[in-house]
Image 1: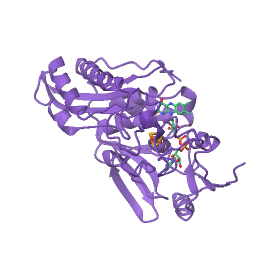
Image 2: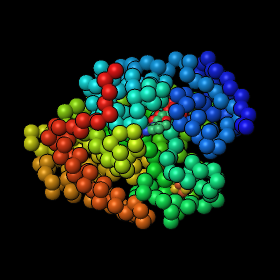
Image 3: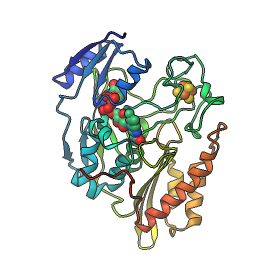
Length: 338
Ligand SMILES: Cc1cc2nc3c(=O)[nH]c(=O)nc-3n(C[C@H](O)[C@H](O)[C@H](O)COP(=O)(O)OP(=O)(O)OC[C@H]3O[C@@H](n4cnc5c(N)ncnc54)[C@H](O)[C@@H]3O)c2cc1C
Ligand code: SF4
C-alpha cells in the first residue's frame, strides 16, 4: 500500500508552490502515464497536485501568427482543432498516430511532453535501472533492447523518448512555456528533452516544481509538403520503433527548407540541422534523400536486438521525404473521427 496525499490546485501559482516545496510531490494531469508508473511501483509520490482545473485549456493565436496551446489541452482536442488540422497537419497526424482515442481524450499536451520511457526494465521495479535508481545498472544494454536507442545513448542508459507528438513539435520548431518558483521562461523544443549522459534519471531540463503552461507553434509553414510516418510492431496502439516527421518547402522545383525529426531512436526527438541543410537548393530525389538520411543517422549504434533500426530508420527517412515532397502524407491507420 502506498500512501500519498491529493490536492486539487486552483491557481498555477498554488500548484507550483505545492510541488516546489515538497521533493516528493508531483503534478498530475490526465494521469495516463503517472498512474501506471505508480501502479508499477516506479513512481512513489508522497503528494499529487492535480492541475486539471487550471485555466490552461485554450488554443490562442499569437501576435506573430502562431498558436499558443495550453498545457491542459487534451491530445484529441488538439488534433481535431480546425486551425491545427488546416495549418499544422503534421502535428495533427503525429498525435493521431499515438495511443488510442480514449487515451488521447485524457492525455494532455504538457503530460505528453513529460511521459517517461517505455523501456521494459524501467517499468520492472524488481530489476536494476539507472533511470529509476541511479547507479544500479542498465540491463537493457545487453538484454531485450528491440525498442531502444541507436543515437545519443550513453553507457548509463539507452532508453528512448516514446512520444509521437514531440517528434512533430521538434520538426515544427515549437517552444515550451514553463513557470516555476523562480518565474517564467521559454525553452526551445530541442533544449527541452535531454540526452541521458551519466544522469539518465533526468528526462528533461525542467527543475522540480516547474510546470509546463503552454507549447507555442511558430507561424504556419509546411502545410502542403509534410508527413508523419510511424513504423511499429502493430498497426495501432503501439509505440514507434522508428518514426519520422518530415516537412519540406519547395521554391519551384527545388527544396528551399527541410525539417526532419526522428522518434523512437533516441532519448529525445532527433534532429540534425546539417542533414536538413543538405537538401536546400536540391531537386527532391532519392539520392538527395539518402544523403540526408545518412547524415541524420551518422554515428548510429545498435545494441544487438535493435541493430535493424539503423537501416529501418534510413529507409523510413527516405520514404517520409518522398511522401512529403509528393504532397501525399501518411494517413494514420487509427484515425477515428469523433
Ligand atoms: C497503453 C498506452 C499507449 C500509449 N501509446 C502512445 C503512443 O503511441 N504515442 C504517444 O506519444 N504516447 C502514447 N501513450 C502515452 C500518452 O500519450 C501519455 O501517457 C500522455 O500523453 C501523458 O499525458 P497525461 O496528461 O496523462 O500525463 P500524466 O500521466 O498526468 O503525467 C505524466 C508526467 O508529466 C507530469 N506533468 C503532467 N503535466 C505537467 C505539466 N503541465 N507540467 C509539468 N509536469 C507535468 C506529471 O507529473 C508526470 O510526471 C500511451 C499511453 C498508454 C497508457
Ligand atoms: S535503458 Fe535506461 S531506462 Fe532502460 S534499463 Fe537502461 S537505464 Fe533503465
